[in-house]
Image 1 (cartoon, rainbow, N blue to C red):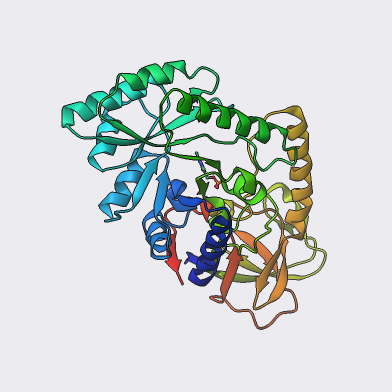
Image 2: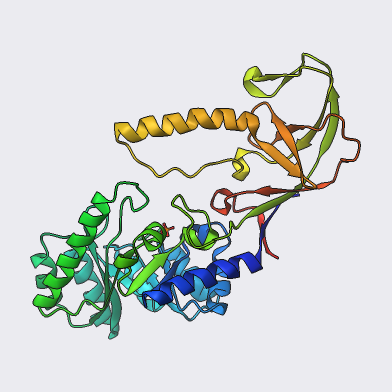
Length: 367
Ligand SMILES: *Cc1c(COP(=O)(O)O)cnc(C)c1O
């Protein structure tokens, strides 16, 4: 048995402190619920956010947008990925989703469909300030102005961009992206395009750069308190995997445990088997993807450090910590409970886990 528990009180606390911080800069919160709501279960999590005062959601796929509407969620939903795929645009429009426009063709396709359906489409413009993914390049916006002049059925309600490393210690690149964005917004205004609400911050930028909050912030990971920047507003970590001890066993001295023969018992050892492994998302760490040599070295260093950490990893049962023996398997780990006569098969265990990595087949429970 495995259940992913989401502590409602802690989640509400996180929502409240984020709202409090946003209030200080008078910025609107857009809650990003992509990746199955960061693993919390997109529908139940979104409803919880809305019940606690969040008014706008954002997703990255058409499927997620539809799922939210099918669940009866009426709040504004921003689809953050621009698309030139007509079928997808149609579905988004039918479901009253705010779409993102990131290329001339996307603008044209959206306007054509809107005209055909005789509807007005709500849209945000995406500016690429140096991510190289979605959006009009920040320094060649003439094309955007031209494309928008041709449209009749599109209402621009916002303009945004995305940081590529707002978590990084070095602030230079983030400031460059921010300046490019501000210049792009001015360019639109000078060309009589109302940019609507402007937004660029994700969780890291929200926590680190209050001066960049602008009209709205797009918050994902901060709601779960699982961030790689300093937690300066007291966010609580969301995500506990509840499971049970499945087996107990006595192993003789000098006996191997697990893959790679990485551990050998130094004495007669009583072990407990916990039916959780890396496939369940246990002990999987969140490193931002980056491919510069310096980052590779940094990640390698962290990986080596983690190797030792793995060995030192302690599993808590009834507030006492037990050592992990050998390597974590796909679905199992073995812990040392030598000298303990209280632990029994079936005893419950609660593991700290990042919900994002917990397989979607495992039940979510808001407790
Ligand atoms: C995922 C995402 C966010 C939220 O990122 P967090 O770091 O989890 O807050 C914001 N904007 C865009 C475009 C995203 O894809």
